[in-house]
Length: 324
Image (tube, rainbow, N blue to C red):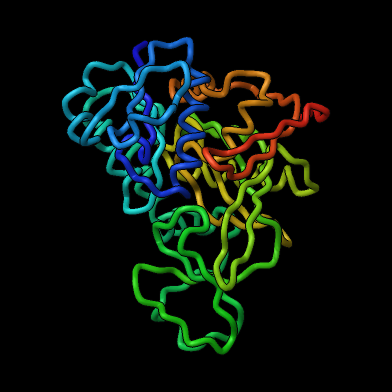
């Protein structure tokens, strides 16, 4: 199988340190997991002098869209990493779907739903516990602490907290949610488009900088008294949206029960840690899941923590843990 792998920031030349660090690390993790395939990966000419994807020779490109339109048909399958912001994940998904190449990820319809928090909440309403969500015009005053976030936001980007009595600027494509005290976690899952298998519960390290939230890393897998409840809610959420395939991440708040925050129809940051402690090749399991063959389970021989470094994400492994 000839496989194309790319990550949006490194392939399109976006030199944003916050995006580049995680993108580079996830790209290199995928390349390592598919080392035994006939792999080609893309790198923007802007980064041609950087050592990315050690052991692999990149195809140096100019315009990403133009390259995909001209070259996709030469591959059997494609796996890529991109964010929902600006509908980039959806747009690239549709380009690959139209080419007829096997997409090792979710369908365009599923990505479209998960890229817009309004559509996600409508799809999940009545199926899983959801955070109270409002449109800007519904907020006449601020009676309690609320969270404001872009409707197509990624991780903690653009999220801010407003306090009782504030007169916030609610212009733009925003949604407002109740602030729920609890623990920020995510669940990583594999899905074949209909059925989902929870793999791990992951801790999210989120810090408050003034009125804004910042994601700084996390650890995976972790144990928690609400782990099975989180698994149940995450699985139900993924199975509620047809077409979610491969690796999927569900962000949750653990409070009196697990509340769904969002669904990421793509590879998420915990992957770079999980692959280091999984007793199976996670990249290969993604491929098998897309082809309709979910594993019965995945065991881990340790825990991994990950945080932002100078050139990429720093991963530290504790091999003393065994479980799941």
